[in-house]
Image 1 (tube, one colour):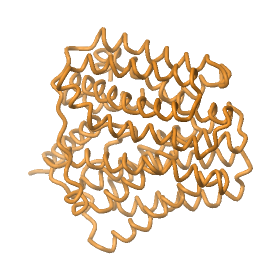
Image 2: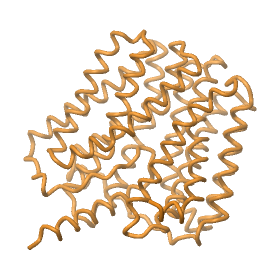
Image 3: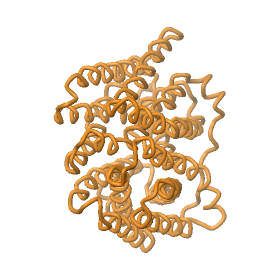
Image 4: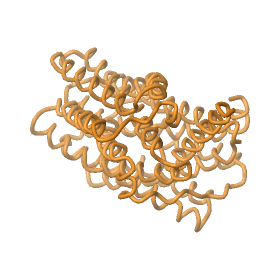
Length: 420
């Protein structure tokens, strides 16, 4: 880890500042939208625009990099993010916000691709796992700390929007002034969805449904908080608890996944989370119960993303894994686009708890389909499965492919150790 910090500290610092800005903007918009009188339905359109932009950015950024290079792409996209954050405050209009969210989602996706390319290029085979861990820590730390920052100024004012714009602007300096020469950019062409579904139906269906859960969790949490009357501090604690749960349960679930049938673990994780949330909703008037529900959401869904990737890898040859990761990310992104809109409509007409009901429905669907798939073919022997490698939901194909490389290297090392 010392090698990674020594050689990539500037890049990690820049990414930390970017994550502060990105983590703050989602919460801030959810709160400010209520202050402006926007309904949950209106805010759902605004929030879903980010996921549409993010998916588009992940597909178009490689072409932009090939045309003008890493540095220009990074500088241009980061500048657009910084400007969009100011426009939020200058024009509190849902149509303007939706357009800005689309631009921010597109730009953040591109910025992540560029930064992750540099990080991957600066790591060696021996340090790539440490680099991925450091990157994940930086991402989650930035998002969680952003929930603290929102308490230091009035969301109805201009200051917080200026702060997130400044954070993004400052992040340019350490990244652009100290990174090594731009690496050669390459990503694998995604596997066709038809072939991927034939290989791992549960991986495809699970990733699609999980995209819907992520978009509700990341896009509508602050909207839910405003609808039930939480204070700004309570909303920030609630969202911070969701992310914290995702971090704390990542490795325990990963440890289990390397020691049992992953389909069974997927069924257990989603099934138990669904039951606990249903029970918790009977006491949904208590803020502390809501915090527990938030923790359960994060603890079950963030590791589930890595679990589905690992499960899919179990049925693939090494050379196909990187291609499959891109297709899974695409399915996850498609699932994320429309779900906030449906949840926003439900929250407007059926009440704020539709936020939880929607996630329960999606989790139950994964549980049922996972149980069904267990009846269709035998489980792979544990010793023949690929290693679990943590990957965060807000990833791009770059990090997904790095995680695949790490898993392959671990598998090869294990085979060499077990060979006579």
